Amino acid sequence: MKNAGFLLAIVLCAAAVYASETKDSLPQIDDIASVFANIPPDVRSIVFVKNPQYKIPEGGHLQGVQFTETAEPGQQIVFLSGSSNTKAYLVAAAFDYRRHGRMIGCTFLPSDGATPPLKHAGGFQIIGNYLAVGVEDNQDKKRSEIQFWDISNAASPIQCAYLTVKRSSDAEKIKTAGAVGITKTINGHLLAVASWDANTVDFYRSNAYPLSDERCRFEQEPFLSWKQAEANRDYWQPDKTWGRYQNINLLCDRSNNIYLMGFCKSDDREIIDLFAVEANQKQDRAIRKIAAKNMRLQNGASFMNGGGIYIKSPMEMFVLACEKNIREKTTINLAP
Image (cartoon, rainbow, N blue to C red; front, side):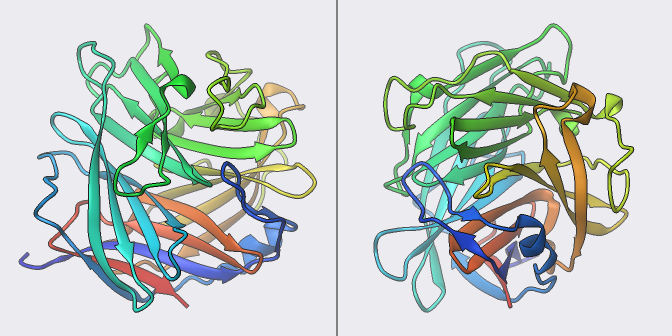
């Protein structure tokens, strides 16, 4: 449809958040369950325009969306991940204080030199000046890697290759990387990687150096592997459902408790689920559902394509969703 808008839904909610954002962390929410409960379900729209200077590869579709801000007053940045017939990519769009937006960059994510190529980017998360994204082989479905990018210059991100986590398996869909979440804890960074349709979630720890330090490394093997088919759901609420999450995000509160948010579409409902991550429990109890919320997205936006969160300040948090493809005019929904 001519001039159809690509949609991204952002939901703004009041949040009780304490501690300031640093270059490789997010503000910490004091009561994540309360903030989650107060997320409003409705959206309104703003638009950015496509820039013909940047060619989007053919085929595939968008996979994830995140939001951040720059040091320039009033400027806000949206990042989107995408897959194609040939390569994975990131798109950046900038908005000014009037909410007028323009596409400012398209970065191709490198493969690992093997065949089939890693051309399928998944859901991702931004933490401070860093972006963690999975790229996977969506043909044999046996390989992936988690790439880290310094997005201080949003138009030209720089890969931090020393942080890369490589994944492979003889079985398909086990070591893909359809969605990635990351947060900072008192012991370093925690990385969560969801496989195909989030049937498994692997957790990796860093060695506690800052992400900017070339001595920083993540474990190459997960210290915890959770399987939804084996999950003990006795204490899950308000339901026992684990969705086919296309995006996951991690959060850490002031008490160092870890939470996972999952974004999916089910039976025409756009759903965000909230889970407590309890790594000290037995493996089947390491993820426990504590809340769920339905959203009212518009104009083709869906968590089936991409969703995510951004904590802006001690009183503001965003929730985002995107449509399947970038259009000539790309619409963002903002609520309230």
